[in-house]
Image (tube, rainbow, N blue to C red; front, side, top):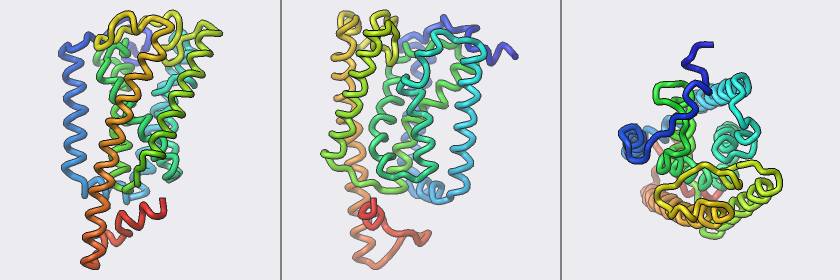
Length: 270
């Protein structure tokens, strides 16, 4: 196969922190987020078109399957550390499948995981080991933009209600899952989720001693708790704005332009 798809061709290249490539990827992420927030009505209309959404998600899952076939075909080692216990790799499939199934409770539960995983993957580009312009790097961008932006889009379109209790259960579940992975890494010598003994990952915004095993787990959990709360505040603010808009529409006797129930009715169901 062409060198463009060879995941091992440039696997020793690390994207430098605050370098041009890093800043461009972060800027694109922020611009996409601002565009989504600015065009909320268009986002709602887009996600109301079930056939379009399903076609996109199926194409995305095919893309993921193609990536994993390349990982297997090129024997990108250690293969077993990339699937199924690697968080971003698993979430990218889970989120797409949940939106396809319209499993609203599970979508809301995993939205915190997804948006935080997508964000941290751009905040710390040391996770990337592909040369920009190669398929590995392009897929990295597609996957993590998807993880970061999908929860925002479904929140705008479907107006989930966010409570601290539900949020806390989701956060504690991930903390417990990460601890389980930490124990698996300890027992097997693997490096799932960058929690193993032989973890090459460097996190520039954390002291070096905090990223050395076994302190990787408590330090990563601390960062995760902070990100989760920021995500909750964002989702909570968005749901309160939708609730206010819904209340105003109910008082005026109006529905959405496409005739679907107002957000309050939708949240009551979810």
